[in-house]
Amino acid sequence: MGGFLVVLFSVLLLMFQFKLISPEWIFAGVLITFLFFYGIYHLQGKFTSVSAKSFETRLFWNSLFIRILSITILMFIAEITWERPFYVGAVDSTRYYRVATEVASLFWEQGFGHLYQHLINEYRYADNIGVPFFLGLLFAITGNSVIIANLIIALLGSFSVVLIYRTASYLVEQSEARLAGWMAAFMPLSLFYDTVILKESFVVFLTSTTAYLATRMIITGGVTNKRIILLVLSTVSIFYFRTAAGAIISLCIPLFFLFNTIKKNPFYSWGAGIAIVALFVLIINLTGETEFFMERIEGGTEHGDARLASVEQRTTWQSLSAGPIFIILAHFAPFPSMMELNPYYGHDATYYWIGGLVVWNILAYYALLGLWVLIKTQPQQSLMVWGWAAGYTLVLGLTAMFTQVRLGWNVMPMMMIPAAIGLKNYRSINTFYIALAIAGVLIIAWNLFRGVGRGVM
Image (tube, rainbow, N blue to C red; front, side, top):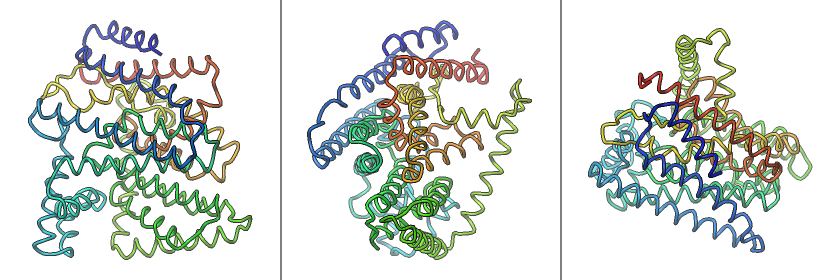
């Protein structure tokens, strides 16, 4: 691993003639990548004899500890760089915070009934109001503290890790499930998105909740009114953060219950599925936003077609039809950008992502292998995992949005399940070399295209 990282950054340095970002950021990215794989390698052999409940507790507290440490580091860097508690260069975060403070004040001055209209007046679109609505109610109770907001988001991230582990426990052996849990807990990109005021951590928490609840009901047969209501409310809530994610999950759920059985009786499964879909449709209609969400989905398709056409016009290989190529790339993307583009504050969030993106670029090949194992061995019971992963990746590819880190990260935590399966089932050193080679080629190619497109080369 160390040799690969040295070679990768040496090639980039030679190709781009010292036009890379400052060495300390590259070193930090290398160190983060190395520490992740080193830590996961050693953790997978520990706590194997403890019970699932004890492991879950360890997993949660370790996840929360590393996220609190990440909050401390990011806020310290932010304070000394631009004297604000938000990560350097934050735009959406600062607006979410401002609107959340307004929601908190409005809650006490005019009551709960005025909050929704205020949020719509501010954002216009319903799928942007989730974060300020949640934080606004939090601030109404706790006060307008950025630290408290970050800690709550870190808690959600830690609960997401536990839900991913629980979901994996229903599908694979404990060794694979625990490896998936450790990787979700310490994945470097999670240590950024689970510690800042953005919508991504909420999307991951809600999608992890729906995947866990649906999988639990099918595997255990424990269908209860409480679980059905929680599943539906989680699915509906996703639409107030990211419409595309909500659309994919809401498509996966009926298919999941249709193709599975509960207690070996398909009618139980179909009945539960029908009840979930009916309740989901009812609540969506009650929100009054059904037409908006449909328009948003259709608009996303049109935006994707326009974006594809635009990208194809700027390439020399437009005759190859970029769409299918983008779908393939969407699985491995996004890629770290290491070209020096002279950001206003000396650095921006892209610098923090380098190590995490290199980690994902390597794990992506194992995740692909793991998805194949899941689909081959238990396609029905694991549909909530591979269906969500494949559906979201398809959307990223068709809309050419796979280069957006904040969008790509939404599916990565759940992809730790197939990544763990791939690592456990394909231990050959040749497989590892293939993963490294694919990651290296794609990272170099991306930085080359980025450098040419930004006029740096």
